Length: 317
Image (tube, rainbow, N blue to C red; front, side):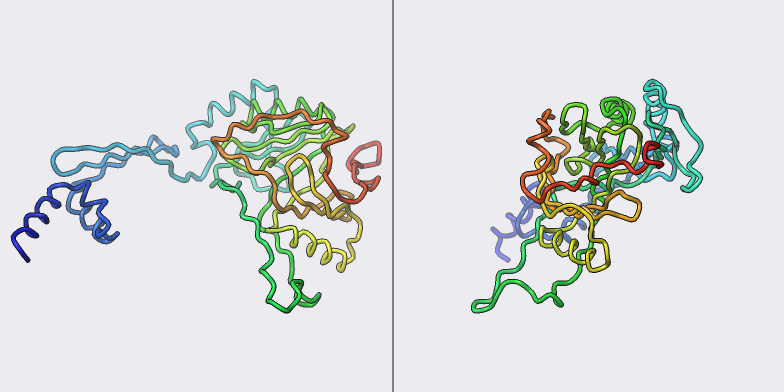
């Protein structure tokens, strides 16, 4: 090693930021540097809450301060627990005992329509980024692009996208879930239907409400990677005997491709692909869409039974 090279190395060693970002510095090198420079770490948990304060003490007396969140087992441990209960009380909703068919943990309340709501402390399950749409692979030159029926595979939902509930008072439901639980209005059509998303990034809607004379479940929606999977899902359900439904089509509000499968109880399960995504920092402005021009872009005519609430007392639900 030449004297000039030795001088260059000494200068680099004295300039930690440059050494840290140098293209020749590997991840293992950075770990070694951190171990040499870091004298101690002090971690302080705020009571039993999710809030964690971290102070790193570095060589030379420098301190860096960081805030972290840790998983907690109970909603009562959250630092926002008291404020959450105050918002729920202010909304007029009542705390309730756990639903007899559900797990007990969490904070239980009934929404204005009487539906049980369980609030728990858990990891985020709504998407943090937009789903990547999967296109079929390009065809081999000289061969057709479509697979044979026997090789088409199965449509396998990746996650729950949203739920749509019937409500006698859609604006009242929107106010409760917004003011008490922190959801945000995405879009609506007057007081007939409304769609709500999560404040920390989610699909265009994770919860929606449609006007009816009574509460009830209209559908649950399950995300699949592509419109191809929507079609395959439709076919596999028809092959299993579930022929009633609606689609394939494309919605205006939410933009997703859909196929609704009617279940034995009269509600629906939806295969959904390509739904709009609202990020935590997106400036999404809710629009009041004309109902007659916003239900779907294309698709078959809507069957009469699609908007029936089978839980309505008027239908013997």
